[in-house]
Image (tube, rainbow, N blue to C red; front, side, top):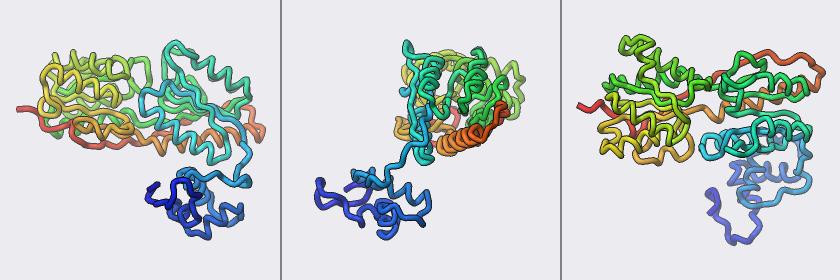
Length: 355
């Protein structure tokens, strides 16, 4: 069985009806798509093409579109599952517009962002999407992006708006994410709440810390200084969460908000090493709602980053930039930030404050 479709022979060519069931369209619609006829919506056509791919069918030659150009996607790593999730949707959206995505991954000891950009520019890419790149690092030199714009390469920046860069930005509301996590724990009776987040030089870390401090002030009347003493800046990793939890638990925290799901897993590990149970002794909230995080033990309460909407918006903004450049616009784009609201997803890692 493939996607709900039972094939009589695993080596047989899927029938028109199989493709129609998989794509949830009529056989007539499948026939029109396969024969390259007009009168089919772009979204419907995309579903039929996806059904062909899922069922292992080769696309007819007439359906193989010529690429509109190469678009680079520069991401920090693939070990954090939220980045592949973004990459998959961005690449799918680019392909839907006729562009060929080129995935460029930074790894410790590997190519730097600047080196990857230079390689992409040498290949005359049509545009670049940066995900959690140096633009989010307030200590990095932003002039690299001005130089890229001067070379006529359109780009869009995801996660981490930088006021020194004139470009389209796509971000989650990190402040709101931290606030809703704190409010959730406060409603469960927690008062000693800590924040484990990434390095302070990163914009998302700063924004989460600001939202965290504001929420502690609203819920418990803590001053900004008092709230900041509950913040631990470390690495966006399991090890970083583990290290932050060590000191926050020493401070008596019964609830910990984390800057990523991986950090939250590190906090859970640190708690268990001390003989504490989650959520009986410690409640933990992550951030991202990355794939498979609902299947951890316990299932992780987290703030969901709207990946689908953000990735689609990033591609849309880039396509607009590409078209404006093609139309002859010479001045750099104005800084624009598209901010998307996150969503609290309550699962099993949070509970009432221990008595």
